[in-house]
Every structure is written in C-alpha cells, then in structure tokens.
Image 1: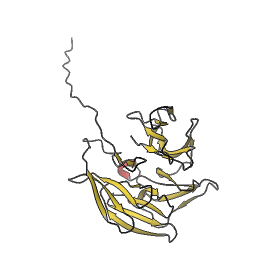
Image 2: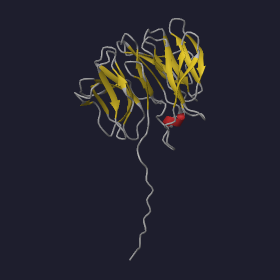
Image 3: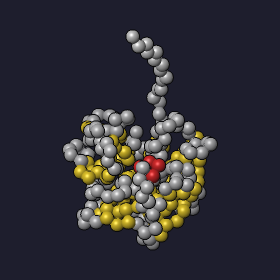
Length: 258
C-alpha cells in the first residue's frame, strides 16, 4: 500500500501490509531495499525531487506519529522534528526540494484532540512555520509548479487550495474523506470519496473547480477504514487505489475441561 513513484518514474516506494515496513525498488521489482523495520509503522512515503531521500510518517508502538527522512539507497532514518503535542502526518516536498509541508492528524485517526494545521519545515534553516489560516486542515500536497498547496478539511468534507504567492485559501470542491494527489502537470487534483453511498474516484480541474467522475469504487471492508484515504497516480497518470483482498474466517472452539 502507499505506493509512490520517483519523479523520473524509474523507482517506486511502498509500504508492506500488515507489518508497515517501507521498501523501495525499481518499477520492475528489482533492486529491492528495505528502508525501515518493525516495530516502526510507516505511512505516506514521498520521494524527494532529486530521488535521494524519502519522507514519511512513522511511529513506534505507543508513540506519536512523526515525520522522518530516509536515504533512498538505504541507511538509518532520522526524525525531522522533535517531540510536540500534535501528531505529524502526510509529508510532501516543495518542487525545489528545499522544504517539506506536513500536517497533524484528525482525532479519529490519531486519538489526538489537538487541532490540525499545515506546517512547513525549511530543511536548510530547520525552521518550522504554520501556514496562515490552516487550522483544521490536514493532508497537504504541494503542486508540481509550487504555486499551490492543497489540503483537506479535518472532517473530510472540503478540498482546499492555498495560493502560496497570495497567501490565500479557497474552497476548490466538496468531497468525502478524500486525500488528493496532483497530476504531473498540476492541472488536476485526483481523490477518492468512499464515505458515501456510491464511492468513486474523481478529479477536480484546478482552474475552475469542475469535478469529473473517473470510476466507481467500493473496496472497503468493515472496520478497516483508517488508511483508505490514500490514493495515488502512476507515472503515466493512471489512478491507484487500495483494495483489501485478505480473508477473514470465523472460528469456534469447544473446550472441555477435565
């Protein structure tokens, strides 16, 4: 799950299920390298523009989510920021690779009652700034041109757009539990809406906010929805969504004591 491709399209990073380990390989599956190891749990990996690092959200058992960086060739990961009262989630790179944007997690996913917000970490100065007007938003994604940062309202009902130059937020479209992915040219945001009667994969044209239906999907399984907000695109622009094909069985045990 959490499949993401490098900018040049030659490499893929992904998280295994159910152990939550981060791996990277060539897109044909060769040159596999495991980048993180249990008991750390990993989600939302993102390649740096130069392909040398992978940012991700990770946590050890009983700990809060933090943003980490790992060398894509393998080696020890390092935590991006220190401890705080808020979970850190959904990192993404600026197009120039000089900054990372990330957010908190909604309470239903993190158990953290703190308000979510969008933060930017400058890798050179190590300074963290909070994007103005971003309280109550999460899952930020930087546009390929650098002009916008998209985000989702914490209750999952709105797709928001931040104009980096004008420092202004606007509502791009309504949605249900979606977490967007930018098209490579920056013209569209792709997302899935599943907490509705007819789950679907859609895209929104950034220039006019027009929503377009791509495909109907309903891959959920009861009680396993925490990370179904993830979606992505292949290097060719084809949508990727998570489908759980595991099996569940019901067992009964008759135990007769002597």
